Amino acid sequence: MLFNSEAFLFAFLPFTLIAFFLISKYLGYSFAKFWLVSASLFFYGFWNPNYLVLIVSSVVLNFYLSRCILVSSGRRRKFWASIGVVSNLLVLSYFKYMDFIIININGVLGLDFGVMNIVLPLAISFFTFQQISFLLDSYSEKVSEQSFLNYVLYVTFFPQLIAGPIVHHSEIMPQFSQHFRRKVNWKNVNLGMLLFSIGLFKKVVLADTFSVWADTGFAQPETLRMISAWQSSLSYTLQLYFDFSGYADMAIGIALMFNIQLPLNFNSPYKSLSIKDFWRRWHMTLSRWLRDYLYIPLGGNRHGSALATRNVIITFLLGGLWHGAAWTFVVWGGMHGVALAIHRVWESTGIKMPKLFAWILTFVFINVTWVLFRASDLTDAGLILKVMFNVNQFGADVEFIRTSLALSGSLLILPAGIQPAWISFCIFWGVTVVVKSPSAIDIAKTYEVNGENTKRSLGFLTTFLLILSVLTIFSGQQSSFLYFDF
Image: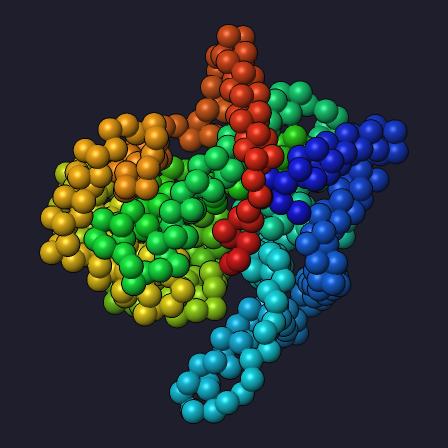
């Protein structure tokens, strides 16, 4: 079920929310949490009921393994932790990487094993990482939670189940034990609606608009010229931002309506002045997971700069592979790992770049590497990147756009010839918005510090964005979120 579907907006969300507080009031908070687990599993199974068995089995097995770890010691404790981590990775590898492994074995050894055409279960990457962190923290004696109901809700809580944030047990499970959250908090409902409306607008109005131009360009890379290649890549850069940050805003907003605070997952990442700053702002919970459960266990930066460089590159190679079973993701992750290693060397010199140059360098690098993230394969990615930097085509492209503008006479008609100029205008506007405008969280914070006039203005903004988004949904098909594929 999609956050941007009529079924979710007009049936599932309002019914689940109202029932949660009514059950909490008349039957008790434990029954309300059980209702929320049931609703979350229905939400997950709405996509494919067959995979309910997978997620339920995963939850039960991992909770049992965490109990085994907590009551054991020494080698036995390590044994149970190893069994837990390996079993989770094996399940993830089977569903996500088995066909990828078969294809590469065939290519390297000249064999002809048939691919299995396994359908990737929704959210398996997210709930697997959450549960691995719970097992490892159980091994490190950082887990004190004993409630199976709270654990199930921690894993399946529907606002963050499908595409994150990847929540840590210590920041959400204690909230499920706090009984003051059982009552309706109208401030949280208002703020949640505000965040949800901003996220929904980002998705259905902005992301889905840029997706048309991105999909067109990446579907036929051989037809692109220099300017159209940059338009396609920048359109995807903006689509991905509005799509994923929109989901994160909606997830935080929905959870807040239930009096649950999810961690921030985006903090205006395209404002970054370095690649290090970017990864502190983009998919923040994934960056935190990779740091805590991969980079630091590898040794982090404790054993000198050479090993630190190795560790960061390994971390991002595996982080790239986490996003998808394709060499494009591995190369994308490797490029970011190398960029972070170079940034470490640059920082050691103490030299500061001018802020504008630092932003341009960072943004262009991010945009260029998103080409690998989006392209069907390395061949298409190479073709698009080659065209993007073919300066010999620039003059002809500019002349084409100038002629189109002269012939059209008006931007309002938008004939076919003027599309390149119109797309460029929208991209310029989109980049300006993501760089200059406040984040949804920043907007929500003004609700608390300003007076009634601000609250009324934010209420008007919520209503306006919801109406505009719903009208957009009714006028066309709903598209899934990009991170559903990862």
